[in-house]
Length: 138
Image (cartoon, rainbow, N blue to C red; front, side, top):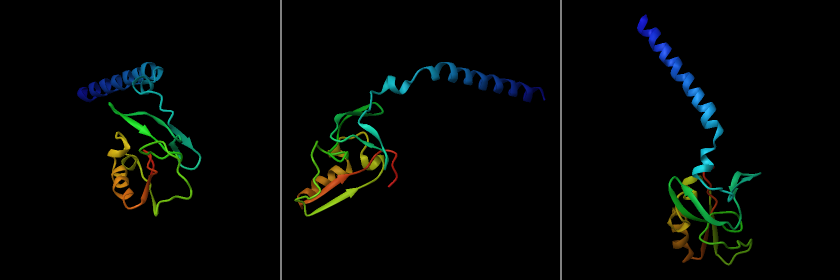
């Protein structure tokens, strides 16, 4: 009985100090903004919940990895800032939708699977658009 009581007292103290540490220390500082820059290229969207700003040309971070981040006129991750036209010279246009894997978070567009597909299919006059955004569901 004495061991159980000692365990409960220690558990209560740990929970109490954890609460104090969390409430008084961590709630006063926003560590996300200390370690990561302002990401104003990631924006709210009425239809999709969140998306990317059109024609962004900036850097993004994934953990400690810094990488070039570029979007087109539709707000899709792309190789370069470009205007996507409703009527295109391409034979076909393929839209790829998904989450962080499709977005290629942490990588330049050319190094994502969508960017690699884009490079291969451009030779066949097929345009690829990357509508992937982290935390989206396909």
